[in-house]
Structure formats: structure tokens, C-alpha cells
Amino acid sequence: IEKEGILYFAFYSDSWDGNIEFRGLDQGVEYAVFDYINDLSLGTVTSDKPYLNTNFKRSLLVKLQQSG
Image (cartoon, one colour):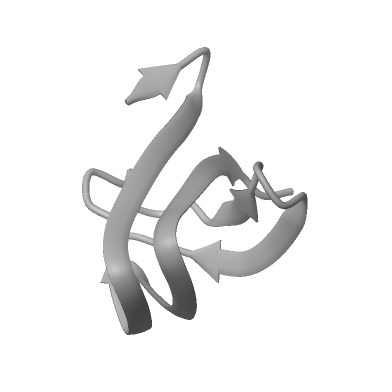
């Protein structure tokens, strides 16, 4: 979901440990990944490297904003 230039993603699993993939990213743009429920920065992704290694239980709700 995109709202006002921010991309929102939701991932659900009983237990997850590994890569998650972000789709629909603009080429040439670096995005900061932010867990807005737990107030945590999780790193950055790009369309060339759209994967983030993470772990969570039940759900992970994140927003992506252009870095810089």
C-alpha cells in the first residue's frame, strides 16, 4: 500500500527467520525500512536488492521511505 509517498508492507507468520522480499520498489531509489509498531529501523533496501533478513513472530508491519 502506498500513501503520500510512503510504502507500507505487512508480513504474517507464526514464526519467521529469513529473508523477506519487497516488491514494487522504484529503480535507483534506496528505501529506509522502519518497523513502525516497535519503533525500530531495520536497514535499507533497493529494487536491485529488495531482501531484508529478519525474524518475527506473528506479524511484521513496516513502512519504506526514500533514504537521504
